[in-house]
Length: 193
Image 1 (spheres, helix red, strand yellow):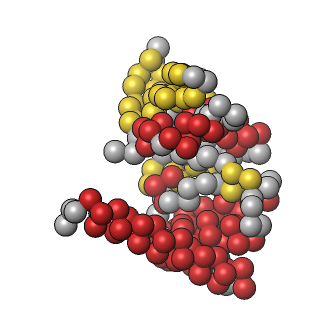
Image 2 (cartoon, rainbow, N blue to C red):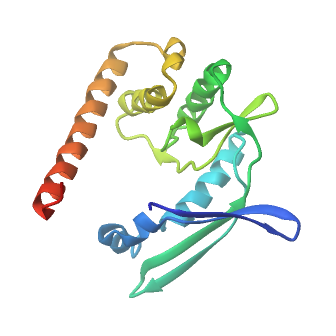
């Protein structure tokens, strides 16, 4: 289980409590928390940045961290719950435009799976967004479009197929293949079937 997520009502307000269990367990990520913000703090900062650029998202409430030797061992993010409907095919153009808006401000969404977007009235809201700085410029932007297309195949009509798109597609498949091979090798080394 990658994360613990619980929706609760507190003082009449729906909030979400999330523990990124997988990231809290990884030794390298623990080590890096000695020098930079933890995953939950980065998530809450992302929510603030989204608000600043006019993107509908969760409102941050706070973070709880358990540290040992200056490293985060357990953490929780607390933020408001965003009510909305699942994104449908007719909304794909709006989702792509929202992703483009985030890119325009110099960020990447960080997780463009369809489940991380909701229709709220006539607008699109994003949830579970952890903004990242662009590293590979147009390639990383197009990788986000391509990742969204994995869940929403019909969204391809809203994405321009330029050289950056095809490079991003190749990089996406290389990364996915590397992860699958690595997972396969781990399973084989453990003797699992």
